[in-house]
Picture 1 (spheres, one colour):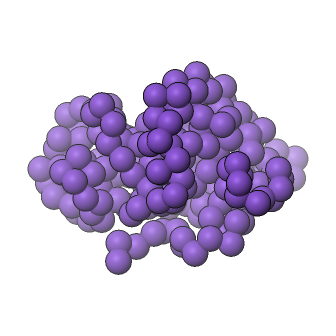
Picture 2 (picture 1 turned 90 degrees about the vertical axis):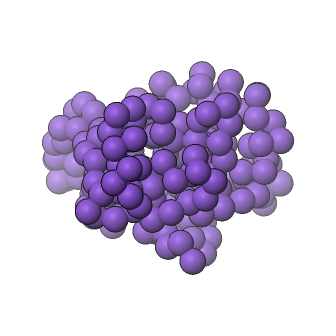
Picture 3 (picture 1 turned 180 degrees about the horizontal axis):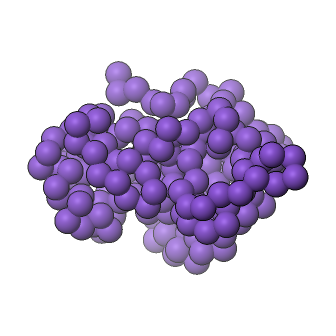
Length: 199
């Protein structure tokens, strides 16, 4: 991910619209919920909906239980505890967590549909580290690229959150239409593989 001092060029690791959509629908980088159509080249695009950080099979957040973060640690969810939300399947580690989420998804879902909060504050999309890149601030779950990006986000949290909130509507629209830059761990040569495991 491009961050000051990262040594990356402005375009290193960025997926083009075509590559992002091809990755979304073929390689399983993320999932777009909503009505889709194919363009003249057979690449799917979005007519309406949400772009949620999900696997190609529709499992949101790499199968991590978003309620568990509020208890202090990430946990993997189970297929037996699934809630459908925003066109994706959200997995939970217990029936109680699934019920809590189903009753009030907005209280638990990560900001920016699970994309990197630091990246959103800069106006682009990026994958996240579900194990080491998370934080709870003022009762909201924020996910980031990795632990270092998490620390950078936290060190400037009020400015970063303000910028991310301002950027998110336009960035979400750009992610939906494929015009936004999107960084992937694989594209940056980062050793975080999705679906991420809790090791």
